[in-house]
View (cartoon, rainbow, N blue to C red):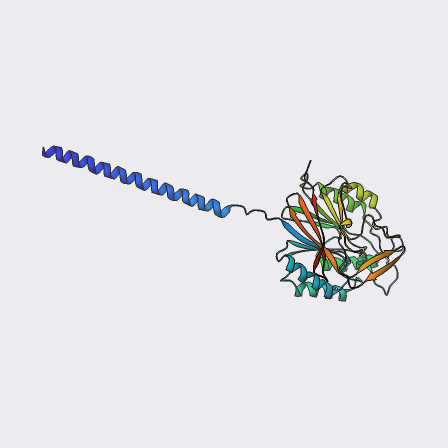
Length: 324
């Protein structure tokens, strides 16, 4: 009888030990799984909440209007991803004028996105005290721009949130051969553009291209780009392209957005002043100041015209570049 009691006690003790081991192992397993889940949660890629940027053309060294545009856009969207200054940053390519714009951007740095893309325009090749540029003058103006923009070339590109931003730029300006307003794009630049458009290309995904001068305009005598046929042919291979141009200063309207060419073109308006074309004459409207605000979600781009004086919207146009 005594031996039976001892045997029974031993069986109970063994059962307790086994149960304890199973419980400890189960607890440890749950703890490990919990840690794995925590690790997965902390390393999860954040959702893409879209892309937003603004495009400002023709500041012409007008610091007050640039400051007003920056403040207005900050009220529209506090944390934009980029701002593009699309040429004619100054009225003349002079250091003191660039310094004024640099100081304005520095003063407003808390209101600005981290990425500011600065493109070249025809006025960035000007000095009204001089006549047409000689080759050495062209290089001097170009270097002044490059120092301001922080770029190595008048054409350059960058990627923002997986979207390609490609900037084109005239490689000369204000010469007897080229004239005062037109852009010259070398074959080297056009070949570079072909490579950049093909880089990481996804059918249907927007590609944003910027050039100060236009491809076409209703203003008589304003040709825009010397190589406009070649440029148009290259861009036509990519219907996803949205080409932003400035230069003409014409007032913004939804008609400035032209689709299915097969690419899209969008006029940016002008920060400094607007122009009313009247045959070969132009009327300047110095009370006007306009630009674009752009929202991107996947393959859908919404372009909005903004009046910085009235602080109101001019138009909103949705562009879908979804692949067929």
